Amino acid sequence: MCGIVGYVGKQKAAPLIIEGLKRLEYRGYDSAGVAVLQDGKFVVAKKTGRVANLEQEATRHRLNGTHGIGHTRWATHGGVTDANAHPHVSSDGKIALIHNGVIENYVAMKKFLLEKGYTFKSETDTEVLCNLIAYHYAKEPAGANGDSRFVESVRKSLRHAEGTYGIVVMAIDAPGELVTARKGSPLILGIGDGESLVASDVSALISRTQNVVYLKDGEIAHLREQNFSITTLSSGAVSPVVDKVTWSIKDAERGDHAHFMEKEIFEQPVALENAMRGRFSEDGSTANFGGLNITANELRSIDRLVFLACGTALHACMVTEHLIERFARIPVECDYASEFRYRNSPLFHNTLFFAMSQSGETIDTLAAVREAKRKGYKVLAINNVVGSTIAREADGGIYQHVGPEVGVASTKAFTSQLLIGAMLALYLARLRDMSFSDGTQLVQALKAAPDLVRTALKEAPRIREIAKRYAHYTDMLFLGRLSLFPIALEGALKLKEISYIHAEGYPAAEMKHGPIALISEKCPSVFFVPKGEMLNKIVSSMQEIKARKGPIIAVVTDGVELPPALADEVITIPDCHEAVLPIVASIPVQLLSYYIAVERGCDVDKPRNLAKSVTVE
Image 1 (spheres, rainbow, N blue to C red):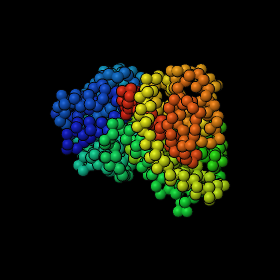
Image 2 (tube, one colour; image 1 turned 45 degrees about the vertical axis):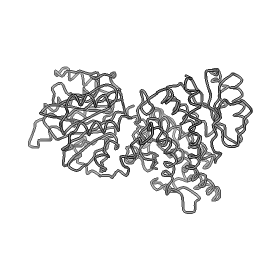
Image 3 (cartoon, rainbow, N blue to C red; image 1 turned 60 degrees about the vertical axis):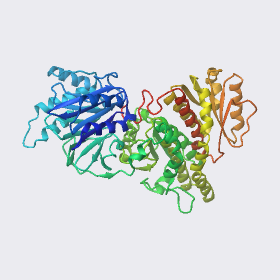
Image 4 (cartoon, rainbow, N blue to C red; image 1 turned 180 degrees about the vertical axis):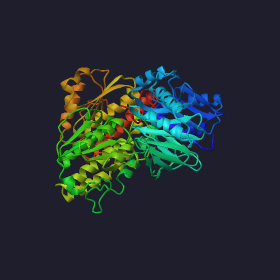
């Protein structure tokens, strides 16, 4: 969850590190800190709150060193205080450390270190690991190879560490060197011209280089100005693969928009075009996915699909479940990735797993992937970040190709997941019994999605006015049926995430099975009201709400006529194919949540207690 940046080169490290931390602030913004090695000692500046606070503190400390580390924190162990902020320095002053993750056996480590005379200033598990490295560093002989003492002290310490970590370490006696290692928390090396960098996300590196190495679990990297080397926790040598980042720094900037979330909402038509580009067959009757690494015959033999995801991605999986069962007639189960490996659910022999995660680093989803593979099942991934851990560990998969998503509340990544889910349903259906003509019809419907979203976005000014009238409420319900029930869940989640209004999503017919007790003049309901066989039943549910004086916001498709005065507000979206409807219906609730949060004065891109990528369990 935390943001990590390390630099060694010829430039002043602190300004480059702070620039990187600003790009990583979506990963954590409880506190931030930077440490540089200069004049033979560590100079540390750290402060609670945003990176802007750190920037002022760093100026006061006059950080001039060319070798440093920086961190923006999402608090796990210990409260939000200056003392608990990273970097941490060992009590003997020899080691400085930043860390993302959780060291689960830190209590036993701390007891051991206290007995050895080490002292502690914070409540964190990170400081314990820092002192453990210092303990091994003090014991390790310098030897003929001057850098082995530093690397080996980190390696020996990590062999005792249980839990997850992404760390970057400096040693007082090793100027111009960094040691970094990962287990469960992402780290990427940046290979520059006469400089080396490390960060927890590519966005912190691309202002300096587009040449990167994705560190794998159990690997330790030793960085210097001119070169780097990678070994494993068991001392084995690793031949690194240098990848090229395909997007630029401008893609990760806000531009003229007030917030990244606003920018990403309005980027969705282009994001959808990018997600589908080159993925339809020449005859226009089906979808093509080049990286599945599974044959058509193998797919035809699959009896069941299981989707693993968390949060917003799980809602996209639920829509995908509906579409695959509707068109391909394959049973589908959607499972909370965080629960999957702790249950002992029976699994069928011919089952294929899909893991969906925007970042490809979600720790619960990654653990579920590993559990499914451990049991002998093939796992395919749907994610957005090239080179991510889930992408590497899956047997194959589909990249979303929507570019960096910085806003904590997912928007363009979600709708691209919906699109890819619909394309997957088409692909599987055409392998089975969907006809050529039905396939071409569905392809045309999917190709129309970007323009339909552009039309839906034109409602933004009207939705902004509606938001002003509803921003003062403290509770809200979102109600839909069939494939729009997961969109109701997603609408409620968006509102909770960024405006802190209590919101719940339900199937519309479930209202009278309990939640209707909440209805009053103080609890508005957002209804999805499309054309089709469910229209009269949805209207009936709306009338039950209205009879109890509940305010109603209706999201209707073109051509739907509601009884007079049934809805207090009506937002119209284009009528479209059922496979595309969830994508288009997502737009008004994204906008509604965004404008309500802005009206309430909330920090939209950095909502309290949240981080973009959940990399701790």
